[in-house]
Image (cartoon, rainbow, N blue to C red; front, side, top):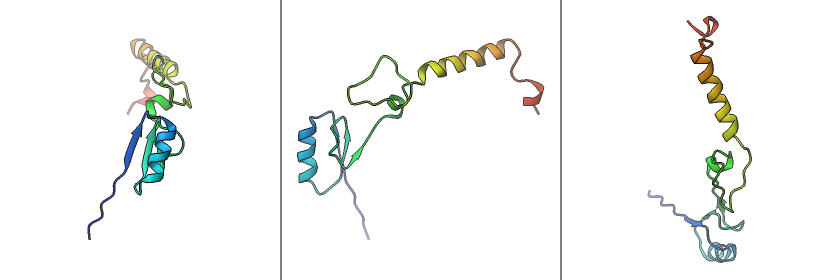
Length: 93
């Protein structure tokens, strides 16, 4: 038995066009910046989490702003290593 599945990714096209394409096709459409009428949606994780501060396409919704938090965590880790604060004996075998 052979199963073949297809879908069409619609990226950064007018939402009315994506709606028409989705209505006409028997295969699923997946939208990325193509509006709400596609059968599924893509949102890149790095965009969703706010890892790129200077790049935000119109179709991105950020659910977090983690870039600064990550920068601070890395800086604190680096400082702890340089100051011999990490690892301590409790974090060692």
